[in-house]
Length: 510
Image (cartoon, rainbow, N blue to C red; front, side, top):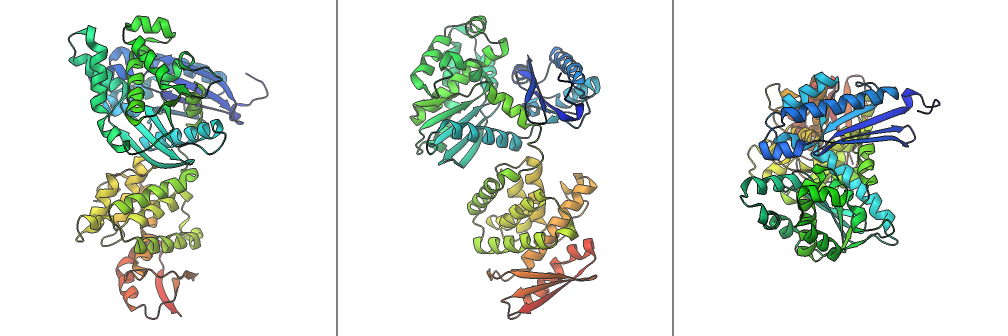
């Protein structure tokens, strides 16, 4: 280790993945100092036996303790704030997930968090965009990004350098491999059976994109990246679909041991390689995509490096997040003018009352999304639509946001009317005190904003705010008579008054 580097300047990330555990150590300039990777059988265990075996748990403990010893040489302890340890989200499919996580935490003195799907999507989006921009001499051609993961396949569509849609499918390399193995009695036709199974599982994805025209397919996945040099040289940016088809045909006649030797990969990679190639190949065939991009191994290392900071904020993805929220609002036929007016008022309240509420920038994004979606429950029924809104948002995806953030938005939207938060409410009761207060503060701003457009006038005029020791004065520009808004504020301003101890006075300003 360079003696000029102090322990405080070092950071690290460990990813407990489906087929390997990797560790990246970097300095404060983002320079990669050390990269380590060792194979595991997590995906094989989970999708073949529905649990993580004792031998795999023991192997994971051994690997992580070995990494701890190396990290200590760089001045990084297991509980160092500059160390982040995440685990693949396929752990949710194991029956003994808690036992596995607890064993790692006790035996290795580490804190492990299961990687959220929303965060993984952000990581893939960021790295894919950077790679595609760097490889395109002019405007980025329309591209379908496919991340064939161990249990799920994610797709991101890029048009003119911007994401236009994203989806997740219950189709994965190891999920399909083990499903076929467990139901196949004849090894001789195993590869053909796998092909047919994958084609059937791909039907929803193909249906979603059958009318789209993509110039290229960007294939992400450690299995393909491990054999990239066999498919395309470093000088070439694109690989032809014919080249991938030849490799697929060649690999169909090989045993796992032969794949290991031929491609110089570990056993776990060799086991997932046929499915990885098949998934990407059939997507390209079905959608008529002839050009394929496979990033090199540095792509995976880049994802690992970004893990050290990606959970801190979604700030870099605000526009993508809001675009996704607007699409969701459109899907459930939300009154656009009212939603936009409430959003404008709510975010204005956030900005002008910053010193009072002391909320973080991420809270503003949650408020913005909740304001756009607070009436989506009307799609189900007007009665109790606030509860329906919570349900819809809670069971939807908003690009770039974690499941926990989406749940918070669902709660905030629910509290735009009727009862404020109560300890008995589901999800809210499971939050810690700090998060409960955060939700209440954000919801209090949304309730005020909704009250100020209770007649759905959707005016464009701004509001101005004046704070005195006991009163929040809101000056309504363009309002001739705010009697209806005052009545609405009596029921919706209560949460703000209870939290901040301020009465709310409305003033018409022509």
